[in-house]
Length: 269
Image (cartoon, rainbow, N blue to C red; front, side, top):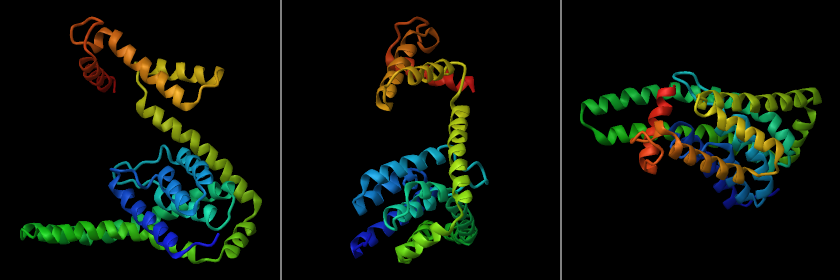
């Protein structure tokens, strides 16, 4: 599709925010469900954007940075895939298939930018020793801006490539490669769920997992209904379980029960 200058600027701005979000993490602006949806709003194809963003979010669900280990980059994967599908005319399946290679490329880029930012850290240290607060702010914002550029620049390059060229490149990829990437992406979804469950699982939460699995298998409830049932069961469980109530019985207050529940869940780990 043909974009006007305002749409191009807005897409690049979303890409810049995604780069910021990939290292801030506070607002999760780098997650595909957000970035792809925003680009869908800009291009006017919200339905395709929600399908693509939701599919990509399932793939990256278990990706996270642990210590110095850098996970594949969700920001570049979401932005680049959204542009290829929503602007350049690639299919949703093609976009999902190439999302993982794009995430690996983004991982290399963010490691490179983080290496460059080491110099900014030393500059901030010297500024702190001198009591130069403005210098510290400049170093912090410069590092964030570099992270934004490492997503925005590839996004701009993809936007600059003619749609026919992109389509030709995608069609030139052998089917066994795109098919293998699609299968691999499906497997990564399962791995992502497993990682999340492994972090959340405890002896007090496993029954809820199996109950939800059974309800999903034998009913036609959607995710909203399942979520409401889950919250309701959790609140009832906290109110009735003696160990989650300060008075040792089932009549404790909801606020006290929730606080005690959090303490007991932490003890389970």
